[in-house]
Image (cartoon, rainbow over the protein chains, first blue to last red):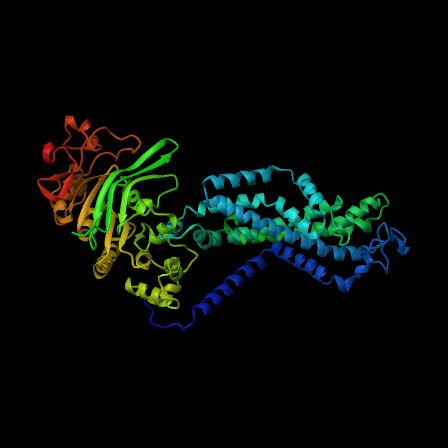
Amino acid sequence: MTSTTPAPIRSARQVTWARRRLATGRMWKQLRSDRAGFTGLIVLALFVLMALAAPLIADRSELRDDSSRGQLPFRPPSGAFLLGTDGIGRDVLAQVVWGARVSLYIGLFATVVAVVIGSLVGLVSGYLKGRIGALLLAVDDFFLVIPFLPLAIVLAAILGRSPNVLAIVIGVTSWAGSARLVRAQVLTLSERGYVDRARALGGGGRHIVVRHILPGVAPLIIANATLIVPGAILAESTLAFLGFGDRQSPSWGRILGDAQDKSAFTSNAWWNFLPPGLCIVGVVLAFTLLGRALEKIFNPKLSGR
Amino acid sequence: MNAPLLDVRDLHVTYHSAQGPVPAVRGVSLQIAAGETLGIAGESGCGKSTMAMSLLKLVAPGTTVTGTVLLDGDDVATMKPGALRAARWTKASVIFQGAQHVLNPVRKIGQQIDEAIILHKTGKPGSKHTRVGDLLALVGLPRRRADDYPHELSGGQKQRVMIAMALACDPLLIIADEPTTALDVMVQAQVLRLLEVIKRERGLSMLFITHDLSVLSSVADRLAVMYAGRIVEEGPAKELLRGSNHPYTRALSGAFPTIGDPASRFAPKGLIGDPPDPTDLPSGCSFHPRCPVVTDRCSSVHVELVDVGGDLSRRAACIHVGSGS
């Protein structure tokens, strides 16, 4: 109990930061050793780099939707157009590079919306077991069973088609699963002795949830978020493919939609639909791999499976 | 005599399960004076903890609590939620059983002791770290333990942390719910001595719950024995343990071997059977199916606590006592 060699005196903050550095280092090592998860991280980093470097790679003016520029439709890849041109003569490479921005932005923003709503609903419905909890659970069930696509199409049609609106529409329609997940964890956490102790201490509901329950569910929320992103990106691609995207800032789904409109598939213009399609698959796969790896790190019980 | 610090009258606590109401506490009345320790003894499931927790309304939502609980003159039953939260820990704090589960594993000891101080704003700003250190020193732990996580402490140390936590807001009453149950005998003795010293130095009142009568004999001034949600016998601890009037108390104290008397080890005087199911209580005296001195009238007569032999400080609920004999 009593050690004779006094440790060098460090302030509480120094101790905390040293611990955090250690924890982050441990997490990083675990991620490094998970080959699939680390691959996902690298692929993701490449896509983010591409999105950030878009102005250096391609001119934004290439995206403009004017058939008057006199370019020939569906030119195959060449020195001037590395990925050829689409049905109205636009550079496919420029579209794919700029589309990465839109797709990633909407995917991440929609995830934030979904995670915030899902966590709030999960926390409240798990902690308040009374009438409010039951009501929130019913709302959650409602959103869980509602078919996503029709609801999203209706909402997008009513609310408009800017990227932000689209992200909110996707977020609002995809939080139900994570609310369920958070609620289940809150239910087990709120039976812990230290929650009783906090209540005896005179803590109110907000105090207990913020101090004792939220820290317990936070890792779950983070891991779950990385698994929501691919769904959100796919949802965005679906909506854009169906024509609910912003014409000014095309996403990958939008490129596929345009290709479909101009019958790139029957014209054998593979350079028009293959790159955006592969990008969607790549990003979704990268996020899923990373999410699984994070889930394993935060919840070691899963790694046995 | 001044009004007692804690005055409980006719407390009933009823849980509501899918099988119907479960009366866990059925009409408990008790008083604790300032500076006094009342011990509550009884088997598992007799309503000790439920009774203690309902004093601060720390029962599951939907549980019915009736009766009056006057804590330092205020009725807990009629308090508004805000006032109730303010009274918790500043008027009465709790030392829980099983410190293991009551400390949050992912927060430091210091932060957790701080929690009450911050919640009730009883500490002066800037003084809180020395306050946590003082509390730790008070319970015999080095100040630097504040930066440790619960898993870095032993069971006895955790229980000391719980005591420090209970003292954080200078309460008038400490409810100790089996504070030494999970500890080995040596550590148990240390913790009990610590509680005794702190209690005496600060003039605290204490409600001490345990199933271990040998613990109570060293800590409690007065003793109340509970059975099936009721107090069946009450009196000064020493007298009650020397000669009890209720057969249940006799059985309970007989279950402990007498030190220095090897014969008692080989002739256990335990009680056969289990405490009754609260949803299906026996008629009359609820102890009669297990009672060694049961009579025909026990299953029909309703027994109340009566003064024993004119002595005002001792009461028992048995037809063999007082006018019933």
